[in-house]
Length: 559
Image (tube, rainbow, N blue to C red; front, side, top):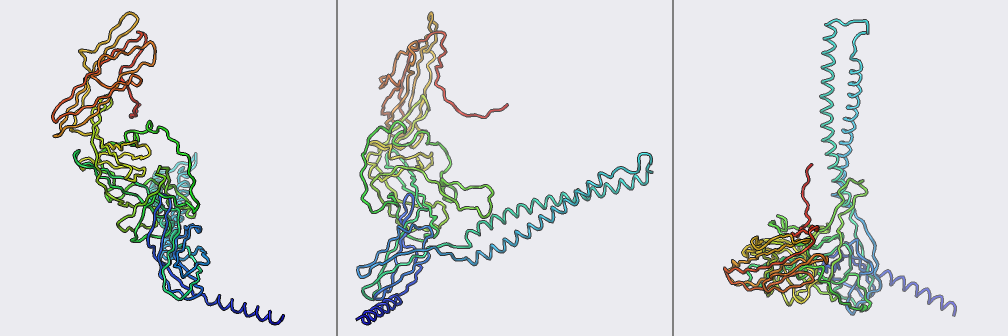
């Protein structure tokens, strides 16, 4: 019985060893099939066709990203195949062509270094020789004279030799500067090449068992953190009687270590780090967030009036990253890094499948992605605040903005084909209506003048009295009527000794707490709307009251 058990054990071991040795080894270097780019991170996906034998198959996938998250590796096989294990390891391969270039540059660095050292040695020797000549200028002794011939001969010698030394020193200094510039350039090129002489990749090994010999398709995916996208918009208005055009665009970057060549992309607002656990609901608190923002979620202070185009001549855009430009040791040089920012996105994630195919190299540079273009029905309104600016601003009002799937980002604003400025679109600050400012409209003339004949300042006993009257005019030079909201203000007293009386406000809506005035008009083509407002201020005569609202600006200062 004991011998029988030993024989069975030996047979089992022999069978297991034979079975393990019969693994079908399949080596592949697949190309990227498509990528889902998250705001921070990306899922890189592959599809491979393999011929599996019945039993165990070892699939080795090379040329994978060196920055993949091992926990994110996913393998999808058909029902006749079962994945037994997945492992990964980093591999490193030398790039021969780049190494040859690096060797040549390093040889040049050595030659330039030798030349700089030789020039430095010669400069030191000439300096010592010049010092010796200068120290020995005294001829003869204190009691011994020198005849004219000897003096002339010595003077000629010193002049000739010192001139030769000075000329050679000048040549050496100039040549040294040239060699130093060349050395910096060579070292910079060597630093960059050192980063590419060895290519790191990940190798993924998948052990699976197949119920039968078959040709099948496998899907492989993993997540990398060093990639992402940010949204921005082009908003265009050609006529106030036409819909606005919203171009949804993105800047995407890839620093995964592998290039994405001519592949379909999907931009997503999902979290690349979400796991398979059920998400937890949090209490949703409501509060007022309007006060910190401008109209329709366009942040105050971010609107810049300009006449230059937002993008560069080559179609590229600036990207919000910084590179350390200081001189560093060659071993310490690092790749460019992308800075991150916090933005608000809806909790319910959405995806943007991109129609065109894109190529995005792994170089941490931003690339422009056209997401979609929409024609959006809008109503238009003008806003004028003549106390601050004698101009009217055109606003487009969009009511059904929730269906646009907006993500917080910059917006380039175009009016009649002209770039007028950049604003910031923040859906988190939008209420019922999205309002987008298209900047100043030169065809609406706005003026605000002080009516001196009705304004006065007088002294009444222990108090001063000031009466101020202003006239506001708005002229519509459009061929169609316009809706315009006019805003102005009256001063508000914050001292019981200062009394403000409202004299006339032309039927404005008046908020006594803030002093704000508001009018709404429909102005026909070519017509002028006139508004008059007046107020009186009484205060003690020893008070100094600035009756003009001032603002702080910076200017040059000369001593």
